[in-house]
Amino acid sequence: MRMNDSEKELVAMVLAGRSEAFEPLVTPYRQALLGLACRLTGNVEDAKEVAQEALLRAFRHLARYDTSRSFRNWLFQIAANQARDRLRRRRREADLTTAAGRELAPAEDPEAGRRAGEFRSALERCLSVLGPREREIFVLRDLEDLDIKETARALGCSSVSVRVHLSSARRKLRDAIRATCPHLEEGR
Amino acid sequence: MTCKKIERDLPLLAGGDLPARKARKLLAHVAGCPDCRGELEEYRTALARLRAAAREEGAPDWTAAEWKALMVRAAAQNAERKGAAAGLRPRWALASGIAAVILLAALTFLFKGSIFRSRGTEPGQEAAVVNKEEAKAAPGKQAPAKPAADKGKRVPIIQPEYLASNAGKGAPPQKTPARGTAGQDVLSVTMVSKESGLQVVWFFNRNFEWKGDQK
Image (cartoon, rainbow over all chains, first blue to last red; front, side):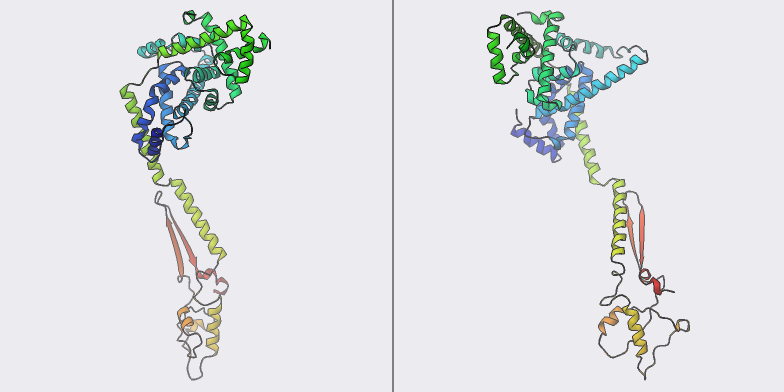
C-alpha cells in the first residue's frame, strides 16, 4: 500500500511549515493507530499515551518519511516502537516494585480501571499468552494486515525472524483458544 | 516430506505466509494426510476467529477534545521548532565567535604585516628611504630640524601617499616624521555576541612587525 497523491501534498504542506495540514493527514488513521496501540499495550490509558507520542513524533520527524512507503505503515512503525519502549519501562517498574516487596497499588481512578477491564476482552486474554515480540508480530501481520516484509521493516528485524515468531504466535494462540477462549472456537 | 517436518510450517501455511513453492509442497502433503489437514484447518479457523473478534471489538477512539488538544500540541511543537531554528543557540554563537577569532589570528600570523604595509612599498623600505633622503639632503637646503631626543636614532617614517606620488621626482620631501609610538596605527576588531553580549576585542599593532626596531 503506497501513499496517495493527496497524502503527498499534505506531507509537503506540513514540511513547508503549514502545520494545519497535519490533521487531515493523520485523521484517517487516528482510530487504527489507537487500536494498534491498544493491542500492543493491552490497555486504553497506555495506548492513548503511546498513540499520542507516536503522532507527535511523526510530526517532528516527517522530513525523514520515505514517501515510497505507506504512510499508515510508517505511523504503525513509530507506534510499535513507542509501545515497546513503554512496555519495557513498565516491566522495569514492575520489577522494581517486586524487588521492593511492595504490592501494586490499585488503580486510583475507578473509571479508568473499569475501562481497562472492559478492554481486557477475550481477544486480549488470548494475546496475553504471547511474548512481546510474538505479540507485536501477530498484531501487525494478522490484525493490521501488514505483509511479512512490512512487518519486518516496521519492527526492524528480518523476514525470517518474523516468520519464526509468527509461527510460534499462531501455535500458542490456537492452544490458548482451545484452553481459555472456547467461545472463540464456536462455529467450527 | 514428513508430518513432523511440516508441523512448524503449518501455522504459516494457514495464513498464506509461505513462498509459493514451499506452500505447494506442503499442500501436496496435507492433501494426503488427514492429521495435518485437520491441524491446518484448526489454525485457519483460529486465525479467522481472532480476526473476527478484533473486528467486532473494534478499537477505542479519541474524544473530540483529546484529538483537538493533540493537534494543538503538534502545532505548538512546530512553532517551537521554528523558533529554535530562527536563531543560533548561544553556545553555537560563542563557538562561532571563537572560531572566527582563531581564524583571524591564523590569517594575521600567516600574512604578518602585509595588511599594514603601505601601498607600493616593501617591508623596511620606508626606513631605507628615510635614511637615503637624509643622506642626500640638498646642500642648499637644510633638512628639517629634528627633535633633540631623536638625534642619532632611526625613526620609522610612514608617508605612503607621498612616497608613491613622488617616486622618481627629484624634489626632496617635506618630511613629517611619524613615530611608531604605541598609540598609533592600531587596528582593533570587536566581535559582539547577540545572545550572550560577550565582547571580544582584538588589537593589531604595526609595531608587531617592527618590533626589532623599536626602542
